[in-house]
Length: 85
Image 1 (cartoon, one colour):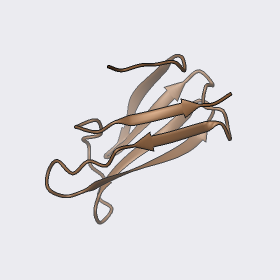
Image 2 (cartoon, helix red, strand yellow):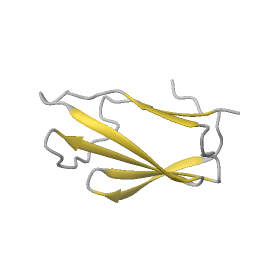
Image 3 (cartoon, one colour):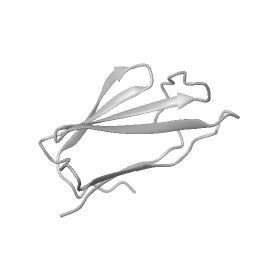
């Protein structure tokens, strides 16, 4: 079950392997934590990185070993964004 206790968040496509989690100023600096599971469903691991760009956006990038971006974020993978008070 998916749960959203932060507020209005939506995702947009950036480029190959890069997506943007958008918000209405909810990603507070020094209070936002980002977590992801590692996906290896196709026989090789994929790595996810997060960049807290502004209070309005977090960039989510997924790579294969070797640094090639891949467009299957969310395929048997979880992403969690926590914002603490």
